[in-house]
Image 1 (tube, rainbow, N blue to C red):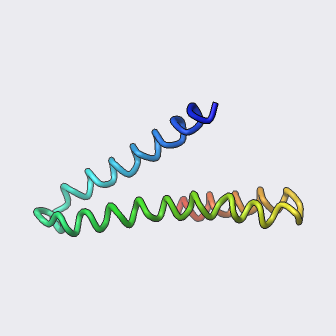
Image 2: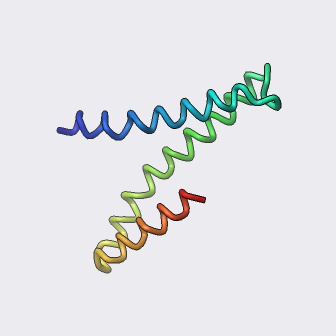
Length: 83
């Protein structure tokens, strides 16, 4: 079951980071600069990893105060991700 869940989560995540990296690779500012492209890709990937680590931590910290707080935190996180 965990294998299926991991594949369903990591698949779209890998597609998003790959698509953004490919799009940035064609941008004129980063054309021919592999170091800049790898830096931008690492920032995008690292931001996703930090979010994946902080989400469960915040849910665990907020759950003693009621699950409505956890769901509110998730809604705020989703709204922040849309920006």
